[in-house]
Amino acid sequence: MRDYQVKSIRALDRGIEVLAHLQKSRTASLHDLHLATGLPKATLTRILVTLEGHGLIWQRLADGAFMASHTFLPRSPQIHDEGFLVEVAAPVLERLCQQVNWPSVLAAPRLTHMEVIETNRPRSYFSHLALGPIGFRINMLRSATGRAYLAFCGEDERQAILHRLACSADSANARARQPSVMEKVLEETRQRGYGTRADDFGGHFEKTRRDVDDQRDSVAVPIWAGEEVIAVLNLTWVIKAATLAQILKTCMPHVTLASRQISMKLAA
Image: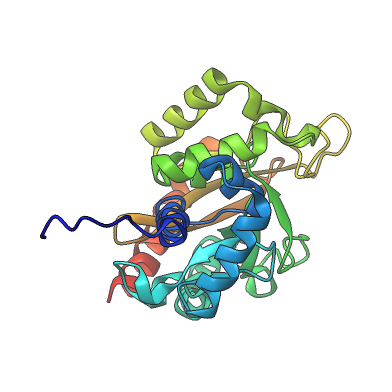
């Protein structure tokens, strides 16, 4: 390009900076963008309104997170469409519960937690187990589902989530303020290939197993769209009925296959 002797348009520079951050971090709140760019929130709000007006970004209804538009991402729009994801996953989840009997949930990331977007519990042999429902919030740091997502998502996204949780006053997110501990947990998760619950996690978002114990355990594996993790599939069972070792031997191959089948359908 020729070396034009003109100044760049500062407002455009700022808009591109915000858009680039959203494409890299995948999701961000207004406060996240303020911390990342150093721009005043009033300025960011005008930029976001402008970008949204041109279809370059959109705002998720569930938690108000801003996201880059699918149209301008270097990947298929469908992989970010949760309706499409659920449609693809539903028959696989139904077969899975027929194979292993225990119920599963499919969960997608939000700014500070995972959220149930589908479950095969009504079709499961153990349908009486309360699981979900749709919209149920899952702890990001202590659940098998949250740990699986954090372990396998991209580094930029993982650091953004951990920073967000570390800044939270919620006691459920205290582990995010122990980076060395969390990194050890996540590395172990990557080595295993699946997420497990924290020892003190009894299913409640905030309280420990000592206060609220659902008498269950879970494992969870990532759902991939190309090289990107977009959701997590778990399996939950009653502790008195089976040990983790038994589940890994009898059920885990089916869970892993189910995650691969969903991932392959997304890539088709």
